[in-house]
Amino acid sequence: MRAPMTSLPLVLRDTGFSAGGVEILHDLSLAIAAGPPTIVLGPNGAGKSVLLRLCHGLLSPAAGEIRAGGNSPSTERTALVFQRPVMLRRTALANVAYAIGRKGARERAAALLERVGLSHLARRPARKLSGGEQQRVALARAWARDPEILFLDEPTASLDPAATRAVEDIVAEIASQGVKIVMATHDLGQARRLAGDIVFLHKGRILEHTPAEDFFAAPKTPQAAAFLRGDLLT
Amino acid sequence: MSDLSQALSVAFHLMFSGNRELWEIVGLSLSVTLSAVAIATFLGLPAGAFLAFCRFPGRNALIVIFNAAMGLPPVVVGLLIYLLLSRSGPLGQFGILFTPKAMIVAQAFLVFPIVVALSRQVIEDLWAEYSEQLRSLGSGPLKSVGTLLWDGRFSLVTVVLAGFGRAAAEVGAIIIVGGNIDGFTRTMTTAIALETSKGDLALALGLGFVLLFIIVLVNALAWLARRTGENLAGA
Image (cartoon, rainbow over all chains, first blue to last red; front, top):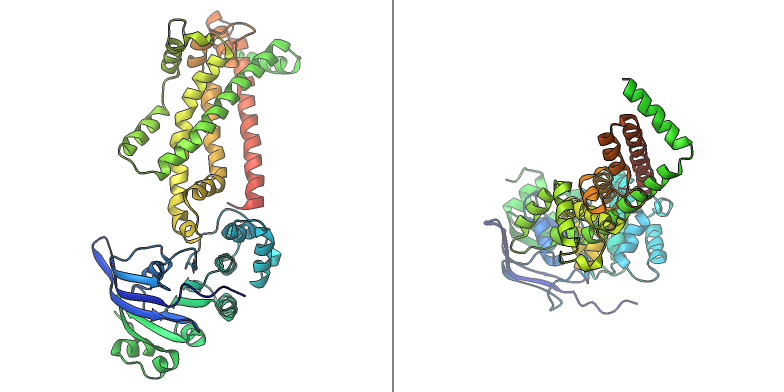
């Protein structure tokens, strides 16, 4: 069984971030607890990717702080699947084994590829795989890190419905292993299918953080209501 | 035109008549050039990776210097190495002037900046693509350098080939530090220079064709290795 979680709850206090003099996130305060997937919802440019990178420890906040179970966020205890993951110039199997990097890595990598349904492509160069297959390799590779929290940055944004479904099934399976999922998307259908709770992000601010049912039934802010109606938020 | 066709037949004759002297010259040329390229690669790849990764004052100046040094005139390098290795020079006690070792040193000196400058560019471009992903996968600086060298291996082969081409083709440096001694430091390029000045243009050109053939052969082998590797591992 896995060791007790040390990265949860994930707490942001007055967190801000700016790049090149442009403020991207303002005064975010948020607590993400163990449980079903948390979906970060919002239009493009809302700051979802930056938020995930901050929580994963790839970026440092310019203001406020982020604590993962009382510690600084760390790439050792969390993993991130990028919207366009970079496949190393190696086989699919070697890409997953790379993330394990110790003895027995290849056996474990093979088992993970099996779980994402890519055993038959294990020996193929990862960069020659289709977009959906690459995203599944990326999921297996992130899974191989044994994360307590798995962040996903719009992992299906450029995939067709069949590939999207495959990715969502894998995400659900990873969640069922007790891994906390935090996923950014602007796809409402996907949010409905996966979310336990919704963080609604708009123009770098958190407008709502509510259980998914409440969010979809009765959004509290006009921006969220407009987003749910499918209006183009600017 | 008659010179050309005569040269071709001389080249053909040289290569297929079992001329022992020719193959000794070819062997020495290859061993000097390949040793120089091996040394320059061994030192140049880490230096290129260091330049790609590290930020320090004077880095940009160093990059410009290495880029410029790709065009070092071989005769000037030969002269400098000559002065260093000559009896009265600072490295004179080694007594390697006019030996193949001196030729290797001179060629390694010519190839080193090529390997540094081009590998720096290859690694830096790859790093731009990889850096976020590698950090996310928990790779420290050392593992990241290893990853970039390995994943850039196919482009780096081309870098090494550029260095090989430079060394295989040059004559200015090795003729000064090697002395073109018959049976000892005579290579294909120095032999060509000698035969040209003696007026035996057909023999000079014939040797030139042999040299070209060998360079094409080495590049074809490298290309084959690269393509096979790419198909197996993906690039």
